[in-house]
Image (cartoon, rainbow, N blue to C red):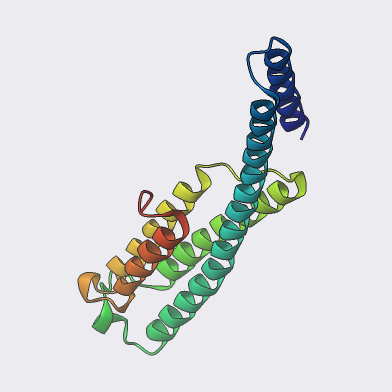
Length: 173
């Protein structure tokens, strides 16, 4: 907040100095102040939007990881593991390691976002790239262990791509 206030103060000071030198009119001076105030408000709104997006992704990730882990446990327990995937990869250690690492990652992101929320700042711009990459890594591990291109989890790739492109635009996806 102090940085933003200082930036606004410097902008007002700059434009006031230019106004005093008669380089800009009163109307131009007011337009510059309004534009700078609007930019500041847009940055705050964007930061809140980013924070809410990441929180939503954390919630969805909790549900998906738990549902996938429960389904894989069911498949392993009923003896269908050899039918759907690579028997040498797919087992209890795979389920615990994959689900545990994804849940731990999600917990760290949730703690980070709660800290960002308390400080009333925006999340680091690289967070969306990190979360998206690790989502792809987790889904890839599950797909490899459950039959590769014949896996029922293959559709999750499309869900990740579509949801991220809707959130961040086509440039990111």
